[in-house]
Amino acid sequence: MKNNKLYIVMVGLPARGKSTIATKIKEDLKHDSIKAKIFNNGDLRRKMIPNNTSIAEFYDPENREGVNIREKIALINLEGARKYLREKGTVAIIDATNASLKRRKKIQGLLNDHPILFIECINNNEEILNASIQRKIETPEFRHLRSEEAITNFKKRISYYMNIYTPLKKEYNFIKIDSLYKKVIQEEIKDNIPYYDQIRDFLVTDTVKHLYLIRHGETYFNLENRIGGDSALTKNGLLQAKALAKYFSKKEIPLIFTSNKKRTIQTAEPIKALQKKCAIIPLAEFNEIDSGICECMSYEEIRQEMPHVYRARKKDKYNYTYPEGEGYATMKERIDRGINKVLYLSDTSKNIMIIGHRAANRMILSHFLFRREEDVPYIYIPLDKFYYISAAQNRKLFQLKKYE
Ligand code: F6P
Image (tube, rainbow, N blue to C red; front, side, top):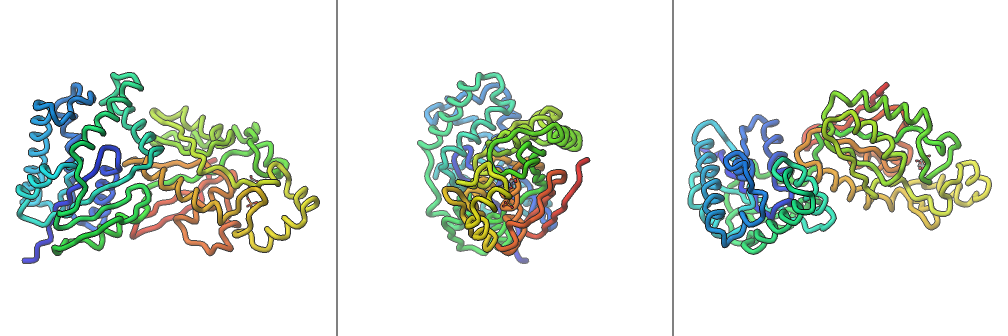
């Protein structure tokens, strides 16, 4: 009989996006009716020893007691995974750092009845790591510590893991992935790995379950048709933000990503206020197109005072770059970076919200929905509706929805 069962073993330092990727693989496999289950060492540890494994010394490789407890937890999960595949399961995902060679040898010794695919997650982007650590310390595990104390402990935990970390090299089947940019760094597959083509494809695809892409409410600049700047919301804009808040109050929105501009943050605030637990994360990557020497001018003023700018932009709006500013084409790199940050930081949350601007949202939308470059700068982005996007490797859904 053809062996269609598989172990996936995640590898990587803490806060490298392992659980996000493990969850994504599980859900995508499930969507294809393939039974998959995650065996997460951290979750088991928090369940078995609820008190104080947030202190870094628990992870010190010289701390015998800590090492023994962690080995015991790992063993319980490995045995659970073996049992799962012996019974009804098809893919068992071991989600832990599995950072040392010693641990991986143990795994290979125990899980010897089906092939193993190792997936190593790599990300050394300081800014993202810090944001990710910030999210981790907001979880119940760290709640009893002051924020600086929690950060210090988490960083120290990472450095303990660094001491024992050996990247994948000799393992039989492995794939290394840049978990922020979803790029395959190295791939060595010697066995026949079931579902490999699918899994590889999941790994490099931007997946969003429910993404709500919203434009900020009406601003004073909008009333005068002025571009750029940092104008505040009008009364009507504030009412729009309140209407959005009411519309989304029944959904769980743990994070709202905005730009650094007043108008997107002001739109996010009432939404946050009606949520149980919600944080606003401003990202400069989602700022509106920088219109350089035309900032704060109206379209009419540009047409009259800078006809060369007006004509050149009209001719090739996508590739045109405002003098001393940006164009759609030059925004692409930062917008894509912003999307990668959002997907990384959203972890396993099913609802993601981005509040951006007209040009920024056009670029975000076109990241998920193919449009010819020449059409991107004309995508319809109204102030009183939002885009709902659901995207995976095998399905895409886009809807323009009213919230009032
Ligand atoms: O008018 C609002 C605005 O967000 C401006 O700040 C920005 O320059 C413009 O829309 C982008 O739209 P377009 O590329 O069509 O000029």
